[in-house]
Image 1 (cartoon, rainbow, N blue to C red):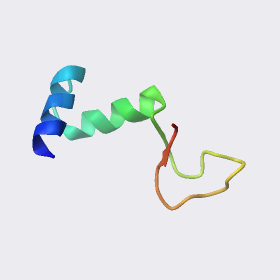
Image 2 (image 1 turned 135 degrees about the horizontal axis):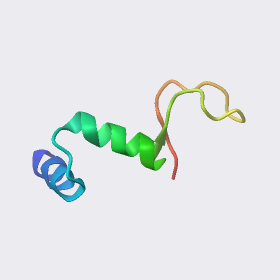
Image 3 (image 1 turned 180 degrees about the horizontal axis):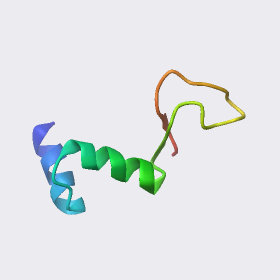
Length: 49
């Protein structure tokens, strides 16, 4: 898992895992909890795919 994360960070130019999370939110890959009005609140971040 560490190699996978490190390669993803290198490809995206991220300096740490927190930056990967920010990139995921900004790109729409994940959405904050409760952001889907049709589903209501969810316990975790929701995958957009």
